[in-house]
Image (cartoon, rainbow, N blue to C red; front, side):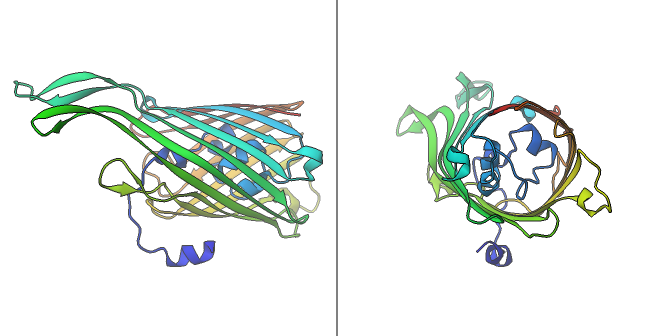
Length: 316
C-alpha cells in the first residue's frame, strides 16, 4: 500500500494541510538524527515515528518526557510511555501526548478609527494530541505497530460580524488520527527496512474550508555500518539511517541520520534533511547510565532563533 501511494500520489496540495506541529520532531535523539527514524528501534518515543520500531523493547517500562524550544517562541512538550509485559510476550503497549503552546498575540477587530481596528485582548493558541498504540514482533525479523489518537487545536476567540452586530466565536477543531508501520530485519548484518504511514485522518473544519492532517508516507533503511568492517571494534557502533518521505503538503524529502555510540553509554549524532528552507542540519548528544537516558539536539535555524530539544527517559 505504501509503495502504491508513493507511485500514484501525484496531486500534491502544498501548504493545504493543517496542524503541522504533528510533523515536528519532539525528542532529542530523533531531532539530532534528522528525523530519519523509520527503521531505528526505540522505546516509547518510537510511537511518534514508526510504532513497529518499539516492538522489540527489552525493558518492561519506559517513561520519556521531552521539551522542544521551537522557532518563534513556540513550545512543544511531549510525553510517552511504553509497557512490555511478560518480556514482550503480549507485545508492547504505548501512550503518547503532545502539547503545543504557540505563545501570546493580540486580537483585533475592524473599527472606524484612525488605526482601522481596536484591540480585543490577548490570544493564546494551543494544540494537543493524545494517542494509544500497540506494537508486536510477529517473527524474530518482522514487527508491526499502530497508533490511534485524537488531535485538537484551539486558536483562541475572535470577534466576527453577525448581521448588524458582532459576536464572539471560539475557534476549536479536532479529529481522529491513525498511524501504522512495519519493521523488517533482512538477516544480512544489521540491515533493517521500515515503512510507516503517519497522521491519516478525515477532513477537519474550522468554518467552510476543510483540511486534513499532514499525512506522511515514509520508507527507511538502517544499519550499524561497523558491521562491514573485517573486525568490528568492541563497544562501538555507528548507526546510519536513511528515510525517503512523501508528504501530503510538502515536496518529497530524504532524511539522513548518523549515530556513533560508545559502550552503549555515550552517543554523538548528526542529521540532514533535504527540501527544507530554514532547517536542514542538526546535531546532538546522548547519555545512557543505568536506564536513565538524557538526549539533547541542536538545530541551526535561518531567520529564527535556533531550535533546541531536551529529553529525559527512564527505562527499567
